[in-house]
Image (tube, rainbow, N blue to C red; front, side, top):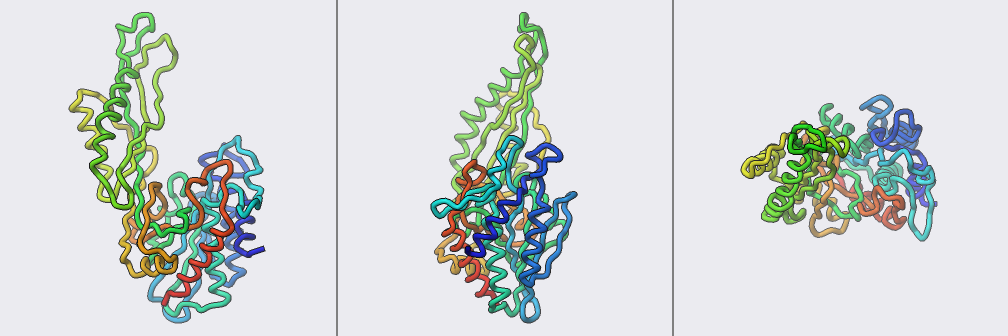
Length: 378
Protein backbone atom coordinates (compact mmCIF):
# COMPACT_ATOMS: atom_id res chain seq x y z
CA UNK A 1 0.00 0.00 0.00
CA UNK A 2 1.15 3.52 -0.76
CA UNK A 3 2.67 5.05 2.44
CA UNK A 4 0.48 8.12 2.22
CA UNK A 5 -2.66 6.04 1.77
CA UNK A 6 -1.68 3.90 4.75
CA UNK A 7 -1.08 6.99 6.86
CA UNK A 8 -4.50 8.41 5.97
CA UNK A 9 -6.21 5.16 6.91
CA UNK A 10 -4.42 5.14 10.26
CA UNK A 11 -5.44 8.73 10.95
CA UNK A 12 -9.11 8.05 10.14
CA UNK A 13 -9.04 5.09 12.52
CA UNK A 14 -8.07 7.43 15.38
CA UNK A 15 -11.23 9.42 16.28
CA UNK A 16 -10.46 13.08 16.96
CA UNK A 17 -13.85 14.74 17.09
CA UNK A 18 -13.85 18.28 18.41
CA UNK A 19 -15.06 18.02 22.04
CA UNK A 20 -17.56 20.83 21.44
CA UNK A 21 -19.70 18.39 19.43
CA UNK A 22 -19.78 15.50 21.94
CA UNK A 23 -20.90 15.01 25.54
CA UNK A 24 -18.19 15.15 28.23
CA UNK A 25 -16.20 11.95 28.53
CA UNK A 26 -16.97 10.62 25.05
CA UNK A 27 -13.89 8.54 24.09
CA UNK A 28 -14.06 9.79 20.51
CA UNK A 29 -13.43 13.40 21.54
CA UNK A 30 -10.15 15.30 21.42
CA UNK A 31 -7.06 15.45 19.23
CA UNK A 32 -4.49 14.05 21.67
CA UNK A 33 -4.29 10.54 20.19
CA UNK A 34 -3.88 11.81 16.64
CA UNK A 35 -1.25 14.33 17.73
CA UNK A 36 0.69 11.61 19.55
CA UNK A 37 0.51 9.30 16.55
CA UNK A 38 1.72 12.02 14.18
CA UNK A 39 4.51 12.91 16.59
CA UNK A 40 5.78 9.32 16.66
CA UNK A 41 5.53 9.05 12.87
CA UNK A 42 7.40 12.32 12.33
CA UNK A 43 10.08 11.46 14.90
CA UNK A 44 10.64 8.06 13.27
CA UNK A 45 11.24 9.91 10.00
CA UNK A 46 13.99 12.05 11.52
CA UNK A 47 12.09 15.26 12.28
CA UNK A 48 12.53 17.27 15.47
CA UNK A 49 9.17 17.17 17.26
CA UNK A 50 7.35 18.85 20.13
CA UNK A 51 3.83 19.04 21.53
CA UNK A 52 2.51 22.39 22.71
CA UNK A 53 -0.56 22.26 24.99
CA UNK A 54 -3.54 24.36 23.93
CA UNK A 55 -6.24 22.94 26.24
CA UNK A 56 -6.17 19.88 28.50
CA UNK A 57 -5.45 16.83 26.32
CA UNK A 58 -5.51 18.97 23.16
CA UNK A 59 -1.98 19.83 21.94
CA UNK A 60 -0.62 21.38 18.79
CA UNK A 61 2.17 19.38 17.17
CA UNK A 62 5.23 20.99 15.59
CA UNK A 63 7.71 18.90 13.61
CA UNK A 64 10.81 20.50 12.07
CA UNK A 65 13.10 19.71 9.18
CA UNK A 66 16.21 21.85 9.51
CA UNK A 67 17.92 23.11 6.33
CA UNK A 68 21.43 22.12 5.36
CA UNK A 69 22.70 25.62 6.14
CA UNK A 70 21.64 28.59 8.28
CA UNK A 71 17.89 29.34 8.43
CA UNK A 72 16.91 32.32 6.32
CA UNK A 73 13.21 31.59 5.86
CA UNK A 74 10.55 29.28 7.22
CA UNK A 75 7.64 27.49 5.53
CA UNK A 76 4.86 25.82 7.54
CA UNK A 77 2.47 23.05 6.49
CA UNK A 78 -0.62 23.43 8.68
CA UNK A 79 -3.47 20.88 8.70
CA UNK A 80 -5.95 20.63 11.56
CA UNK A 81 -6.42 17.44 13.56
CA UNK A 82 -10.02 17.81 14.76
CA UNK A 83 -13.11 16.65 12.90
CA UNK A 84 -16.82 17.28 13.28
CA UNK A 85 -19.22 14.77 14.80
CA UNK A 86 -22.20 14.18 17.04
CA UNK A 87 -23.10 11.83 19.87
CA UNK A 88 -25.39 9.70 17.69
CA UNK A 89 -22.85 9.11 14.91
CA UNK A 90 -21.86 5.54 14.07
CA UNK A 91 -18.39 4.28 14.92
CA UNK A 92 -18.21 2.90 11.39
CA UNK A 93 -17.17 6.42 10.36
CA UNK A 94 -13.80 5.64 11.95
CA UNK A 95 -13.31 2.39 10.01
CA UNK A 96 -11.63 3.48 6.77
CA UNK A 97 -12.93 1.75 3.66
CA UNK A 98 -11.35 1.72 0.20
CA UNK A 99 -13.95 1.49 -2.55
CA UNK A 100 -13.60 2.35 -6.23
CA UNK A 101 -10.46 4.38 -5.67
CA UNK A 102 -11.87 6.36 -2.74
CA UNK A 103 -11.03 6.21 0.95
CA UNK A 104 -14.16 6.70 3.04
CA UNK A 105 -14.13 7.82 6.69
CA UNK A 106 -14.57 10.78 9.00
CA UNK A 107 -11.90 13.38 8.34
CA UNK A 108 -10.78 11.79 5.06
CA UNK A 109 -10.78 15.14 3.25
CA UNK A 110 -11.25 17.53 6.20
CA UNK A 111 -8.34 17.44 6.88
CA UNK A 112 -6.62 14.14 7.57
CA UNK A 113 -5.97 13.81 3.86
CA UNK A 114 -4.05 17.08 3.90
CA UNK A 115 -2.16 15.98 7.01
CA UNK A 116 -1.18 12.69 5.37
CA UNK A 117 -0.05 14.35 2.12
CA UNK A 118 1.89 17.11 3.90
CA UNK A 119 3.72 14.84 6.33
CA UNK A 120 4.45 12.21 3.68
CA UNK A 121 5.94 14.82 1.33
CA UNK A 122 8.07 16.21 4.15
CA UNK A 123 9.29 12.79 5.29
CA UNK A 124 10.16 11.83 1.71
CA UNK A 125 12.23 15.00 1.47
CA UNK A 126 13.93 14.26 4.79
CA UNK A 127 14.82 10.75 3.64
CA UNK A 128 15.72 11.25 0.01
CA UNK A 129 16.48 14.98 -0.32
CA UNK A 130 17.40 17.37 -1.63
CA UNK A 131 17.10 19.19 1.69
CA UNK A 132 16.74 23.00 1.31
CA UNK A 133 19.89 24.97 1.98
CA UNK A 134 18.29 27.85 3.90
CA UNK A 135 14.57 27.05 4.40
CA UNK A 136 13.32 25.46 7.60
CA UNK A 137 10.15 23.44 6.98
CA UNK A 138 7.59 22.92 9.73
CA UNK A 139 4.69 20.50 9.93
CA UNK A 140 2.23 22.13 12.33
CA UNK A 141 -0.90 20.11 13.19
CA UNK A 142 -3.36 22.36 15.06
CA UNK A 143 -6.44 21.65 17.15
CA UNK A 144 -9.94 23.14 17.20
CA UNK A 145 -10.29 24.48 13.68
CA UNK A 146 -13.87 23.22 13.53
CA UNK A 147 -15.00 25.34 16.48
CA UNK A 148 -13.04 28.34 17.71
CA UNK A 149 -9.60 27.98 16.03
CA UNK A 150 -7.90 27.76 19.44
CA UNK A 151 -4.92 25.98 17.92
CA UNK A 152 -4.04 28.68 15.40
CA UNK A 153 -4.97 31.48 17.82
CA UNK A 154 -2.59 29.96 20.37
CA UNK A 155 0.20 29.88 17.79
CA UNK A 156 -0.31 33.57 17.13
CA UNK A 157 -0.25 34.36 20.87
CA UNK A 158 3.00 32.38 21.10
CA UNK A 159 4.42 34.69 18.37
CA UNK A 160 4.67 31.90 15.83
CA UNK A 161 5.89 33.19 12.48
CA UNK A 162 6.69 31.75 9.07
CA UNK A 163 7.35 33.28 5.68
CA UNK A 164 4.47 31.22 4.30
CA UNK A 165 1.88 28.92 5.86
CA UNK A 166 0.14 26.39 3.64
CA UNK A 167 -3.04 25.55 5.51
CA UNK A 168 -4.47 22.14 4.69
CA UNK A 169 -8.08 22.26 3.51
CA UNK A 170 -9.98 20.42 0.75
CA UNK A 171 -9.44 22.86 -2.12
CA UNK A 172 -9.45 20.35 -5.01
CA UNK A 173 -5.69 20.86 -5.28
CA UNK A 174 -6.14 24.58 -5.94
CA UNK A 175 -3.95 27.20 -4.26
CA UNK A 176 -6.43 29.49 -2.49
CA UNK A 177 -5.19 32.97 -1.62
CA UNK A 178 -8.50 34.51 -0.50
CA UNK A 179 -11.48 33.38 1.49
CA UNK A 180 -14.44 34.97 3.18
CA UNK A 181 -14.53 35.77 6.86
CA UNK A 182 -17.40 34.84 9.13
CA UNK A 183 -19.13 36.91 11.77
CA UNK A 184 -21.62 35.10 14.00
CA UNK A 185 -23.87 37.31 16.09
CA UNK A 186 -27.33 37.45 17.63
CA UNK A 187 -30.17 39.97 17.60
CA UNK A 188 -32.80 40.14 20.34
CA UNK A 189 -36.26 41.67 20.40
CA UNK A 190 -38.03 42.30 23.70
CA UNK A 191 -41.74 42.44 24.38
CA UNK A 192 -44.15 42.04 27.27
CA UNK A 193 -45.64 38.73 28.38
CA UNK A 194 -49.39 38.28 28.67
CA UNK A 195 -51.95 35.48 28.72
CA UNK A 196 -52.64 33.97 25.31
CA UNK A 197 -56.34 34.67 25.82
CA UNK A 198 -55.60 38.42 26.08
CA UNK A 199 -52.73 38.98 23.63
CA UNK A 200 -53.66 42.65 23.30
CA UNK A 201 -52.31 43.17 26.82
CA UNK A 202 -48.82 42.10 25.81
CA UNK A 203 -46.18 42.88 23.20
CA UNK A 204 -45.20 39.91 21.06
CA UNK A 205 -41.42 39.73 20.63
CA UNK A 206 -41.75 37.07 17.92
CA UNK A 207 -43.92 39.37 15.80
CA UNK A 208 -41.30 42.09 16.21
CA UNK A 209 -38.54 39.70 15.18
CA UNK A 210 -40.53 38.63 12.12
CA UNK A 211 -40.38 42.24 10.91
CA UNK A 212 -36.61 42.30 11.56
CA UNK A 213 -36.07 39.11 9.54
CA UNK A 214 -38.22 40.42 6.70
CA UNK A 215 -36.23 43.66 6.62
CA UNK A 216 -32.95 41.79 6.50
CA UNK A 217 -34.18 39.47 3.74
CA UNK A 218 -35.84 42.08 1.55
CA UNK A 219 -33.58 45.09 2.05
CA UNK A 220 -30.21 44.21 3.55
CA UNK A 221 -29.40 41.02 1.63
CA UNK A 222 -30.23 42.54 -1.80
CA UNK A 223 -27.98 45.52 -0.98
CA UNK A 224 -24.99 43.15 -0.69
CA UNK A 225 -25.09 42.41 -4.42
CA UNK A 226 -23.33 45.73 -5.03
CA UNK A 227 -20.16 44.38 -3.36
CA UNK A 228 -18.13 41.82 -5.23
CA UNK A 229 -14.68 40.28 -4.96
CA UNK A 230 -13.04 38.80 -8.08
CA UNK A 231 -12.38 35.45 -6.37
CA UNK A 232 -15.13 35.34 -3.75
CA UNK A 233 -18.24 36.91 -5.23
CA UNK A 234 -20.54 38.84 -2.91
CA UNK A 235 -20.96 38.74 0.88
CA UNK A 236 -23.89 36.81 2.34
CA UNK A 237 -26.19 36.81 5.36
CA UNK A 238 -28.05 33.82 6.77
CA UNK A 239 -30.53 33.66 9.64
CA UNK A 240 -29.59 30.25 11.01
CA UNK A 241 -31.68 29.86 14.16
CA UNK A 242 -34.56 31.50 16.01
CA UNK A 243 -35.73 31.06 19.60
CA UNK A 244 -38.78 32.75 21.07
CA UNK A 245 -41.54 32.00 23.50
CA UNK A 246 -42.21 29.12 25.90
CA UNK A 247 -45.68 27.79 25.15
CA UNK A 248 -48.74 28.66 23.01
CA UNK A 249 -50.81 30.39 25.69
CA UNK A 250 -48.16 32.96 26.65
CA UNK A 251 -47.34 36.06 24.59
CA UNK A 252 -43.53 35.80 24.15
CA UNK A 253 -41.53 38.59 25.78
CA UNK A 254 -38.23 37.69 24.10
CA UNK A 255 -37.01 36.42 20.73
CA UNK A 256 -33.44 35.84 19.54
CA UNK A 257 -32.06 35.07 16.09
CA UNK A 258 -28.56 33.79 15.28
CA UNK A 259 -26.95 35.13 12.12
CA UNK A 260 -24.04 34.18 9.91
CA UNK A 261 -22.52 37.03 7.91
CA UNK A 262 -19.78 36.07 5.44
CA UNK A 263 -17.46 39.03 4.92
CA UNK A 264 -15.16 40.07 2.09
CA UNK A 265 -11.61 41.42 2.33
CA UNK A 266 -11.93 45.11 3.07
CA UNK A 267 -15.07 44.75 5.20
CA UNK A 268 -14.76 45.14 8.95
CA UNK A 269 -16.95 43.43 11.52
CA UNK A 270 -17.61 46.73 13.25
CA UNK A 271 -18.84 48.31 10.03
CA UNK A 272 -21.03 45.30 9.20
CA UNK A 273 -22.76 45.40 12.58
CA UNK A 274 -23.11 49.15 12.32
CA UNK A 275 -24.83 49.05 8.93
CA UNK A 276 -27.31 46.41 10.09
CA UNK A 277 -28.17 48.34 13.24
CA UNK A 278 -28.48 51.56 11.24
CA UNK A 279 -30.91 49.96 8.76
CA UNK A 280 -33.11 48.57 11.55
CA UNK A 281 -33.19 51.95 13.31
CA UNK A 282 -34.24 53.68 10.10
CA UNK A 283 -37.10 51.22 9.75
CA UNK A 284 -38.16 51.76 13.38
CA UNK A 285 -37.27 48.20 14.40
CA UNK A 286 -35.88 47.75 17.90
CA UNK A 287 -33.46 44.82 17.94
CA UNK A 288 -30.62 44.59 20.43
CA UNK A 289 -27.22 43.24 19.45
CA UNK A 290 -26.01 40.46 21.77
CA UNK A 291 -22.32 39.67 22.34
CA UNK A 292 -21.01 36.98 19.93
CA UNK A 293 -20.35 33.58 21.44
CA UNK A 294 -17.16 32.97 19.44
CA UNK A 295 -14.35 35.11 18.08
CA UNK A 296 -14.94 36.11 14.48
CA UNK A 297 -12.79 34.73 11.69
CA UNK A 298 -11.56 37.52 9.44
CA UNK A 299 -11.33 37.37 5.64
CA UNK A 300 -8.12 36.15 4.02
CA UNK A 301 -6.41 38.11 1.24
CA UNK A 302 -2.84 37.00 0.55
CA UNK A 303 -0.87 38.57 -2.30
CA UNK A 304 -0.72 35.98 -5.12
CA UNK A 305 2.51 37.62 -6.28
CA UNK A 306 4.30 36.73 -3.04
CA UNK A 307 7.42 34.81 -4.20
CA UNK A 308 6.63 31.68 -2.17
CA UNK A 309 3.00 31.72 -3.30
CA UNK A 310 4.16 31.95 -6.91
CA UNK A 311 6.48 29.02 -6.27
CA UNK A 312 3.57 26.97 -4.89
CA UNK A 313 1.35 27.92 -7.83
CA UNK A 314 4.06 26.72 -10.20
CA UNK A 315 4.45 23.44 -8.30
CA UNK A 316 0.68 22.90 -8.50
CA UNK A 317 0.62 23.73 -12.23
CA UNK A 318 -1.83 26.56 -11.59
CA UNK A 319 -1.88 29.80 -13.57
CA UNK A 320 -3.67 31.97 -11.03
CA UNK A 321 -5.06 31.75 -7.52
CA UNK A 322 -8.49 30.54 -6.43
CA UNK A 323 -10.88 31.68 -3.70
CA UNK A 324 -12.95 29.85 -1.09
CA UNK A 325 -16.26 30.76 0.51
CA UNK A 326 -15.47 28.96 3.78
CA UNK A 327 -13.20 30.25 6.54
CA UNK A 328 -10.09 28.57 7.96
CA UNK A 329 -7.06 28.84 10.21
CA UNK A 330 -5.29 30.67 7.39
CA UNK A 331 -6.91 34.00 8.26
CA UNK A 332 -5.89 33.66 11.91
CA UNK A 333 -2.27 33.06 10.95
CA UNK A 334 -2.30 35.75 8.26
CA UNK A 335 -3.64 38.42 10.60
CA UNK A 336 -0.99 37.26 13.07
CA UNK A 337 1.76 38.14 10.60
CA UNK A 338 2.29 34.93 8.58
CA UNK A 339 1.28 35.10 4.89
CA UNK A 340 -1.05 32.14 4.38
CA UNK A 341 -2.80 30.18 1.64
CA UNK A 342 -5.00 27.09 1.50
CA UNK A 343 -4.13 23.92 -0.36
CA UNK A 344 -5.17 20.30 -0.11
CA UNK A 345 -6.77 17.27 -1.72
CA UNK A 346 -10.52 16.69 -1.74
CA UNK A 347 -13.62 18.82 -2.14
CA UNK A 348 -15.36 20.79 0.62
CA UNK A 349 -18.62 19.31 -0.72
CA UNK A 350 -17.63 15.96 0.84
CA UNK A 351 -16.59 17.41 4.19
CA UNK A 352 -18.86 16.84 7.21
CA UNK A 353 -21.01 14.30 5.34
CA UNK A 354 -21.92 10.75 6.35
CA UNK A 355 -20.10 9.50 3.24
CA UNK A 356 -17.00 11.70 3.50
CA UNK A 357 -14.26 10.44 1.20
CA UNK A 358 -11.03 11.30 -0.53
CA UNK A 359 -9.87 9.82 -3.80
CA UNK A 360 -6.53 8.04 -3.66
CA UNK A 361 -5.54 9.80 -6.88
CA UNK A 362 -6.13 13.23 -5.33
CA UNK A 363 -4.13 12.23 -2.24
CA UNK A 364 -1.20 11.10 -4.38
CA UNK A 365 -1.35 14.22 -6.55
CA UNK A 366 -1.28 16.45 -3.47
CA UNK A 367 1.77 14.61 -2.14
CA UNK A 368 3.62 15.01 -5.45
CA UNK A 369 2.75 18.71 -5.74
CA UNK A 370 3.86 19.42 -2.19
CA UNK A 371 7.06 17.43 -2.67
CA UNK A 372 7.79 19.41 -5.84
CA UNK A 373 7.24 22.66 -3.96
CA UNK A 374 9.42 21.63 -1.01
CA UNK A 375 12.23 20.51 -3.34
CA UNK A 376 12.17 23.93 -5.03
CA UNK A 377 12.83 25.83 -1.81
CA UNK A 378 16.25 27.50 -1.54
